Length: 262
Image (cartoon, rainbow, N blue to C red; front, side):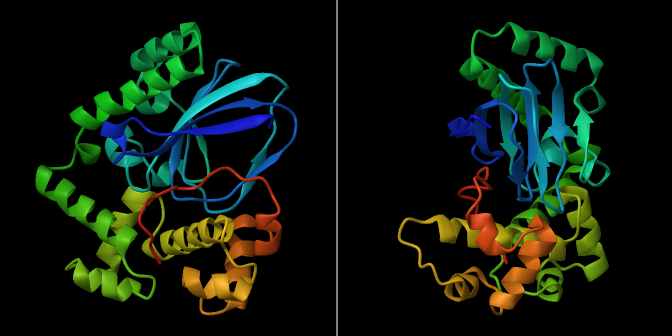
């Protein structure tokens, strides 16, 4: 990928979007590490897709000179904002017409194609997220259930690293099975998988800090791992490579400034 540039989400959408981004793609494969997010991605080849949540690292390559722009929804927001069947989109690229509907998708695709530049295209994607965030309830659920699901999402994302799934269920006044169902609907997978993904992202953020130590065992402990072997296992399971290899690769930004979760 020739270049990839994160762009701050518009201020009123900071609760919905982790970031926006622009890129010129070309040739080389690029490793993407699961981050709990869902991207809406436009390519100058004429494609507009929703990139569902991931449970393992993946790579892609595109022809030289392809322009791409995207917005990255924070973990747990794609179901409520897009009406996305999040578990159904797990590890998949979903055509936007299957999410937004054919007419809305066609109008948006036309406008994206006609826009004069990437910043204008990002403004269109921001506008789509804004319109839907203001007008769609969580998967058509009653307000009481929507509020309950939102509370579970918030608590799961902000829990301390040593909080167990059983603790999360108890604090949410749910059984572990109920908590699992709510998390699958919101994130695409259960709370244990989500917390592993966010812990690895927390490690990567800490390791990339300019003042970070190079001692992986220290970084592992700071990120909430029991030891370096625990970090190694999660890195191989989620990204397919050890953490030392992850840090040597050029990776896209993860969830940015979202709160830590264990």
